[in-house]
Length: 114
Image 1 (tube, one colour):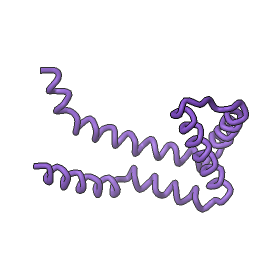
Image 2 (cartoon, rainbow, N blue to C red):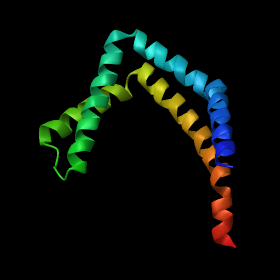
Image 3 (cartoon, rainbow, N blue to C red):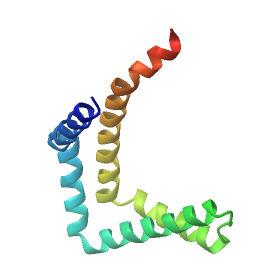
Image 4 (tube, helix red, strand yellow):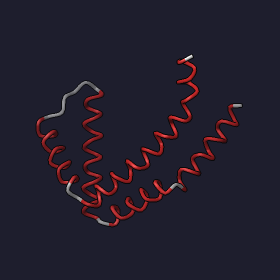
């Protein structure tokens, strides 16, 4: 039974990578990555964000400079068309994954309702 579920999950993974939402995200990422300056901003923001999350997870507070830097970078990202397009495409894929999750977890919801 467990193998059947894992096989179904593998098949679902293949279907997700063929979904228009995934293909649009991959295309938007390739476009972003082709622009060196934009990709650098994107990577720097991701690294800063990870660092801030690690600090918070270990009970440390980010410095004012780090928070200011994060706000500045977030503003730059929000005005960059390639980055906002990527975020929109990511949201589209996330919506699809949320829909899939609802279907997969419906038996649990039903179990607790009955």
